[in-house]
Length: 321
Image (cartoon, rainbow, N blue to C red):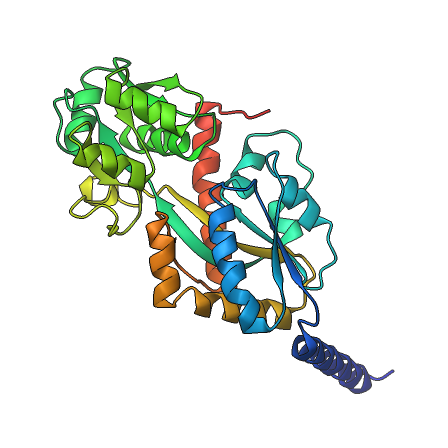
């Protein structure tokens, strides 16, 4: 076969593939979609249900939320699912950070999933007990550097968002704080309020409740931009830690191999519904900020976080086995 005939045949095959994908996308969806996520009532479950409810009338098919408890079981199932666009995953940071803390996983985040869209972010914030004589991040850094190993911080389970936020702060600020572990976010926040600990990185909603009650002092939010959930509270990045970011991200994924045309259709539908004022308001009432990114933007955010938190996790020796 001559080079010109080979090139022509390759072009024809590529064109046929595009046509098949377009035909597939035009016929899609012809039945119900299933979105797998974490346990009912969890941080991923609520936004998944908001999206499913709004997506169903938009695509003309039922969208079912399938809750799977026990860590990352939902991810394991979707990684092995048929890449036809009918089985999706809605999950947050642990999907890509847990592999950094475990020696064995039943999926590979980079190889087994295709990002569809970043749906929401939930910032945390840096708060201190009112008795701690600091009023800014710069003052906390100076105070802690002058007292290495004498300042402590509350933390939930190893590798949780508040734990990683604190360890990222320690790494970027070059300070030595002592971790005091608690069973969960609520008990860690209660410990800060009670004066058992001095520093904590709570989710903005519960954190602001304690700040407004005068039981905690807000120093910063952990998102790159200020959040309407914490009016007047500056970012960590604006207070001497440029680039600091530690937020809960959650979004939609499809199994690798899902046709690009279907990914594009899903991205368009979900990103558009996330911009509806009523959807944004509903999510904000849950403490979540709607995003609606492109697949490439979501993938880049994950890659960046894996690089940054991977270094933090290794330095701190964080394991979750």
